[in-house]
Length: 357
Image 1 (cartoon, helix red, strand yellow):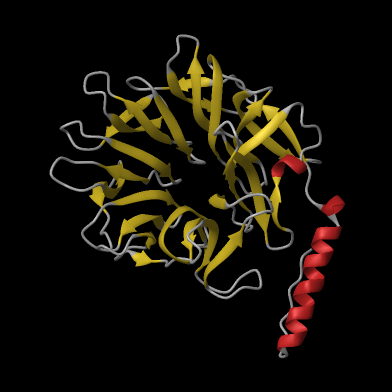
Image 2: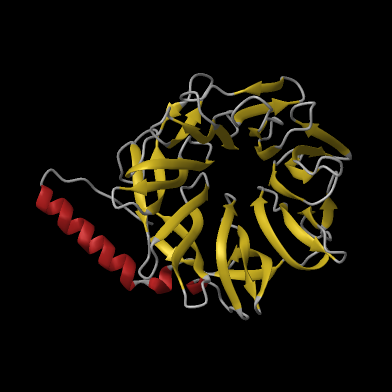
C-alpha cells in the first residue's frame, strides 16, 4: 500500500517526499510483475493492440496474408477475427457490454478513412453522407461513440454518436479544429481543441462547453484517456518545449491537488505521452528518446502509479522472450495491459497479465 501524508511544515513534506522516493527506487522487487503473451495475427507479419475491456476482450489492427491491414477483435479463449467494413483499417476501442467496437476503415471507392461502429453482426458507418474522412476513437457501455470528422467546408470537428441519440458535434474552444479521443461511462468526453490562435489544448466535454485543461507550461496539449472518476491523461508541451505525459485531476487524489500534473520521463528519454488510465489510477503510455545513428526513434512502454511512479514495462515482465515493448495503449481495472512491441524484431500485439492472476 502506498500512503501519502501531509504535514504543516515544508521541510517535513520535502523529507517525506525524498524518503518515499528512495523507498520506491530501492524496492523494485515489490513492483508488479507481468506475464507476456503475443496475441498473434490474421495471417500477416505485424499487429498492434489498441484497447482491452473489463472482460478481457482486445481490439487493434493486424496484417492479413494478402497484405491488407484490418481491424481485429480477440475474445478470451477464442481465435482472433477480423473487424472490417471496406478495406484497410483499425478497431480502436471495445466496450464491455454488449461489447460494441468502433474504429475506422478505408472506403473502397473514395479511399477516405471512414468511422465505423460494430455491434454483433451489424456494421454502421458514421459520418457525413458525402464520404468525407472520419474516425471513431472510443465507445462506452451505453453505445456512445466519439471521434472526428473532416467535412467539406469545415475544419476538423469532434463528434459523438449513438444509435439512440444520433450524431452531434461537440462545441470547440474557438473556431479551429477539434477531435474527441475518449469517453467514460458517465458520457464525459476528452480530446483536443484549438484555442483560437493560441495552440491546441486538451479539453473535456461534460454536457456543456469545452473545458480547457491547460498545459504543463507550453503551448499545446492533448487529452487521450479518461477514467470513470473523471481523471484525464494525455500529453502536453512543457516550458522547455518538450512533451511530457500528464495526469489531470478534477479533485485532489493520490496526494496531489486538483489540476494538471507532469508525470515526467525516465532517464535516457526526452518525451512521454500517456494513453489511458484505469479507475485505480494506473496510467500507461510510451516513452520516446532521441533517434539513434540509423534515424530510428527509441520508444519504450511505461506504466505509472502514485506508489511507484513511472516504470519501464520492459523491466517488469517475467521472461522477455526477445521482446521490446514500445507502447502500452490500454489498461483495464484488473491491471491487464495491451500494446505493441518488437518480438524477435517484428512488430506484434501483446497482452501483459499481472503475475498471480
